Length: 299
Image 1 (cartoon, rainbow, N blue to C red):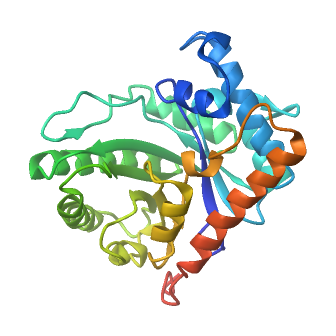
Image 2: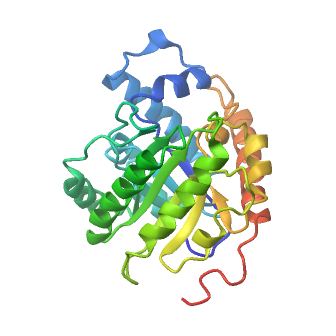
């Protein structure tokens, strides 16, 4: 995960984002009930088709982020995480957040995660190696940004204590007119909080592709940071790939950009061909960014 070429596939749409993902995939709203088992059955079928494709494997994909329901299901007779690791050589990662609070101080904090320890225990039992949790910044409000970063690190330390690697995802809204200012403020707060970690506390960041190229270089080379990955955040795959290729040492962790164009009614050949193209383009952009030679040279 530290050095290998590749990217992280985000297959962790949760209850709130699943209907849109299914709609884009060609599943109509009347084919399931929102929030019910039928909806999760539909999204698991879609994810299974992606994960079992011969084009989806560890040659180009480092890890895959899973929703809790996906972890608790099976793929081809194996628990999902075990299938990913043993059959595909892909590191399983668990999304642990419970969604977002209403906006306050220009940000949306994560809702409380009262069962975080239990989720970590279940993740470890399933062979999961890392976790991911998302919050959102909409405005350049320092009070809100400090709260976002403090909450991410607080949960992150709890996860590290369990022996997992947390991926902290303080997403910046790409439609914010203050995006560039937010990103500068966010970087400063992330660097300050990294100073408080012990040498043995390792984490990852999942960040919005920045307006200023190589803005996160100090994070990429930081000794406590295993890897910095980027979310597509609403950009098309072409836009996200172009931006990513300019961020040295950063690799992709795309969701919508990865599944862009995939449809339920495609033949298996057509599905695999398009998925191969998508994976190939994202892999190329991740590789083009180049892992700087000094990255983790101390390890």
